[in-house]
Image (cartoon, rainbow, N blue to C red; front, side, top):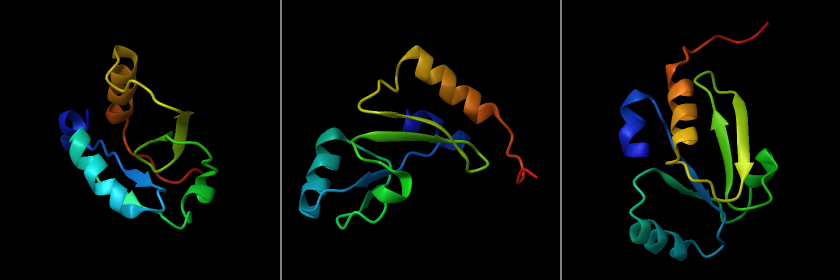
Amino acid sequence: MYKKYRGAGFVVVAISMDRNTSLVKPYVKRYGLTFPNLLDPFGKVYPMFNARYTPTNFLVNRSGYVIGGSLGYRNWESPEAIRLIEALLAEKKSGPKS
């Protein structure tokens, strides 16, 4: 999905909270992940988002607002997920709300 929609502004970022960071690179290679995979071995990022489970997924709109999310694995290739991503990509970026 990332490869298909990145030209339209779709961004995927993975944040690994594995303390053993040497596990991440083989995982990325094994599954052919092409999106950025960041490391958070000291657990600084996860509390910012109140993420207690992996994976935790967030949907962020073009304006930078978290508009939804889920816990656990999701099939992001499902027709419903594709419709959701396409609808979000169709939105125009808006300025700060007053």
